[in-house]
Image (cartoon, rainbow, N blue to C red; front, side, top):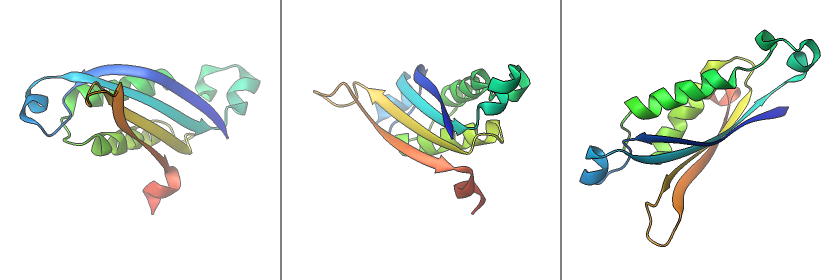
Length: 122
């Protein structure tokens, strides 16, 4: 499988358990790797044969802006589901969700999850 990467998607949203985090938006950094067969798009050079990573990114941005999960684990799981639902050609996804500056002395803290289409059907 080939990999399509969305790197350093920075969106402001609500995530966290502390009262301040529930009231004020903060930076949320997302990286996603989508596993898909890109050979059909490479052969045809036609957009309809390619995974539309712009649509995937826009769906993730909208969800981050509208959602209000307490945990980054929950947000990562939701974003993985969004990626898999966006295009049936996406077989697997890895999503990293980070909260920059959430820990003193650390640039960022977060989680990385990997989910497949098979995980969703079982």
